[in-house]
Image (cartoon, rainbow, N blue to C red; front, side, top):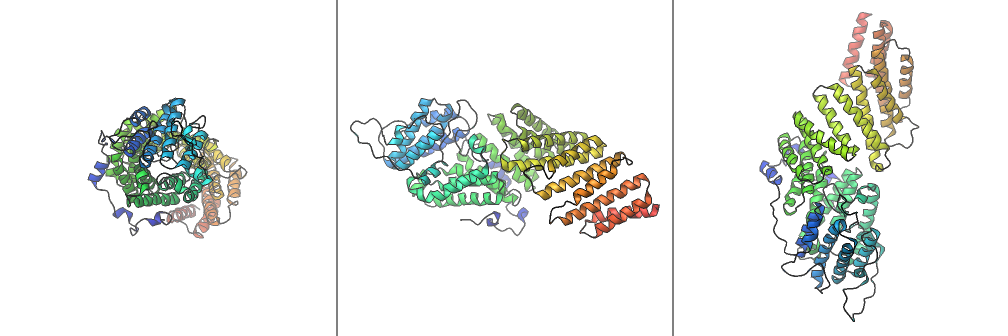
Length: 614
């Protein structure tokens, strides 16, 4: 397998920005709409892929109708007519795709009948154990209300036929089947895909899957991969690329980008091995297009920061495969990934072209909730190139959708971009308002029990960073009460006795010191003779003295900065000699550490001015 992390990528001499630039014509071709109508499917596998595409695009009734169409070579997913084992294996793939669509729009009787067709096809293909395991998983997920005959060995009401002995289901087989394309039963008319499959580049689409702690998903998927060798003989097709991909998606959701990169590259490598042997039975059963697309999409996101041009290449490769896939949400998601990769690579001209195309494509989505991600990406790009009106229009639409669906996470991202927009326009008051909204949304999401544990820490970090900016903007605007409120909020969220740590203690301490010093500076600027200043000064020094082990250098920085601020406070009070003494102490502390040139120049200028005045 591939070595861990992005180190497995080709070496570029550290100059990723000079290799692999996308060709403008290639970019235009990738962003073209699909060539519709697609050719009519001629085999069960082609039909299964088309049905799956329609299901993931949430066009369920079209998918159900298409699954029942007759094929040129004969054979049907519905019914009891005997067929050869290879045809039954292909029909099993089609039956699985049909069941996923019916699980959303069909009646209980229709779903039970479709499940029976799937189980019969699996048995006829010679995989009776998988049929029994699939029946058990369908029962667990509410697709079936009672055991189906297809799982018990029945091939239809043929008189005088002896039933086969029930197949044995091993724990290893059951562990793998649970992670394959077995749908969940959802209320008719509910939104969102029905199976834990690849509805888009972001990962598993089933609500139960996405709500699960990704660390638990990682454990389950690794257990399934460990069980795969023992269960492989009982399984249709080659499920390992799909399992590797889902592991990559779970690792990405947990923030483990290097491991996610490795797993996605493993999935692509396995698909190449399947493609290299077209006569192998596994290649006939596999439907690799969606797996390949989603693997490239994972890489487009995980490599964006470290190898942006490689991320652009993977996004373009995914869109290249999309020529054979009819799925508007997936296409829009891939163009969003491409836009963000182009932006990370600094290719603003190409990014502007992609943003314009994405702004048009997102209107084709049937659900508003799917439009927020693309609109946020377009708004971010428009802000960077100074097209404020277009950015504002996109963000207003995002906020409308977020309010309608009570989506605080999306509202938070819109507020962050609006704060940036106001900042660039010089509207500090508007920026302050949006930063306060960011902090409020982040606090709510961090404390919400429905938020997955791995995401609570990042939300707390967003809250603290937003509050720190609120503190500074309020000081710039002379709004001392707002600045003090932000400092006190940081203090509450970073206190040592605040419960289980969601962030490293050193980071919490640094924010706490920043809040104490910021409050001191804000009060001193508004009222140099305030009686509480000595208490605030002592409080800041006390917190600096609580530096975690290994962070003495950072504590030295804060002591020097605090002494410098003390000198400025004394200067405002007219206490020149005391101010000079404090400034000299700060100067000594700055020089005793690896200080930035700006810090040294600033303290030297302060000492020179105070010395001249003294």
